[in-house]
Length: 91
Image (cartoon, rainbow, N blue to C red; front, side, top):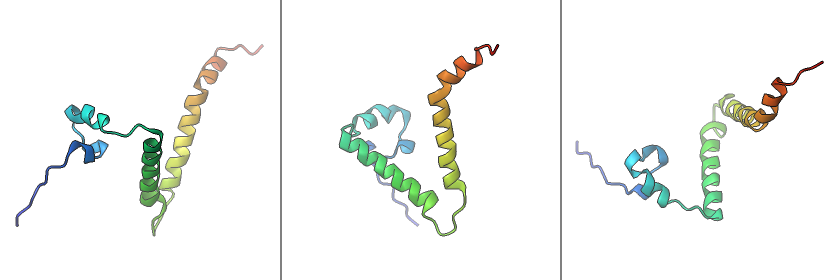
């Protein structure tokens, strides 16, 4: 059986497929306009939704990841307040 390997340009690769030396040219080829960022977020949301939420035999995994992500982000946002709250004396 013959297997053909086609060379894929750096622009068409996903982030996980990019080598460290190609990272600069890959980032330079990204679209950082507001419409480009919105479309990238939309593609990411669609990929997440189709992989974890929109399945025939779904579990709690996709929703649990959203909840854990929300808890982690809210903790990071409130960390400065929590850190200062530890040093207060309650008397």
